[in-house]
Length: 118
Image 1 (cartoon, rainbow, N blue to C red):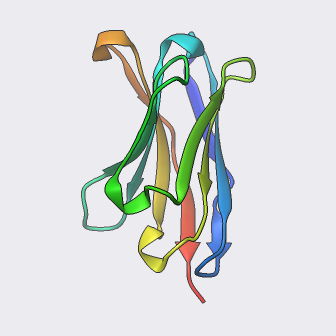
Image 2 (image 1 turned 30 degrees about the vertical axis):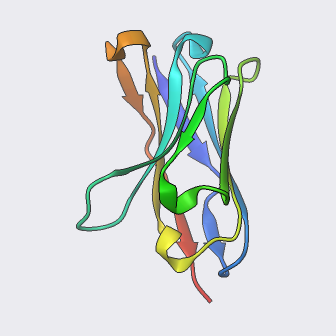
């Protein structure tokens, strides 16, 4: 069955860094666009970054541009989110999402908590 398993979250001080990973299985990973979203209590889930199936195109929400980098390894079936210069407002549960061509199928991981606090 389809699985997306996030890891790498934790507690970090402002200005610190974390690297999130999302390991995928059960579908043809290299055909899917991959995204990272984040959610805080009482707010809608926010799209943070997206990477196309080949990895050739990436997009970011304005608030993380220049600080976060999304990448993927189509051999290891894993997508990453490198987060630098973290701010308290980056605190959220981070989820990865897999989207098939034409968005026929969308799969979500359970999420990993990121807390930025001194």
